Length: 293
Image (cartoon, rainbow, N blue to C red; front, top):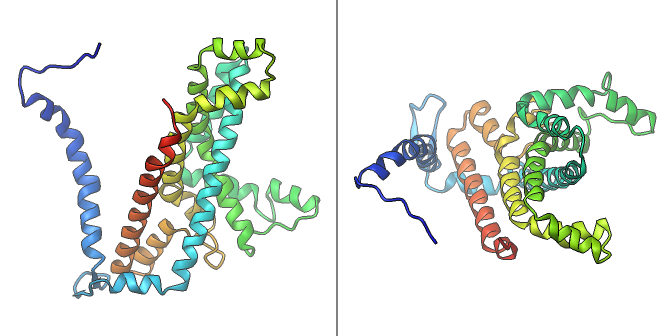
């Protein structure tokens, strides 16, 4: 039986939606509209000299080698962060689901990284990987690897990937654990009676039933890697060395706030927004078909 809410006054539902609609309009629709309009302009830092240039800002970006390089960096960074956070979060959730004593403490400790601000997370890993004083850098040196994220672009990219994924592990862990605990125990027990090993029970029963949760976390992690990792990169590498860690969202900041090229920065933000919308659409259109609720 389906239950529906009935309101005596026709205006009440719209009044209840009004606060959220205002927040969406003020903090998303209006800035997005302004960014699209500004992407067709070229202006100085003070906004005194404004010229309509049409698609010239987009054409210049597509011919910019450094901007195209940031595309590749963003793809590698996003895939690495999303996969690492999902894999470790799933492993911790599977372990926590088996814990009987001290489970609340275990879950609370795993959620702590998510409460840390992105900039603070970046600074923590920055000091641990510091070539001179960092404990992890000293460990790598002891086993024969000369770590230096100041000079080596690959090391810098690994640093921001680790810091960004570490912060998101707790979020993935929480949702995976909630999904595992909602699976009927009778299904797992029946498979165990039939002789299925713990590994087979996990990959044949538990993980497929986590499809909706996994799909949701893939979307959230991709959006997180595209936008919310700005603080991590700004606090650790500032896009360097030689723009090796300059992803698209950080490129928008450098062009607009440091280079004071507001038109090009707006064009970059529009491209970034279209990429995220496109990826989200593809995920819901194709990956969503494989998810069974």
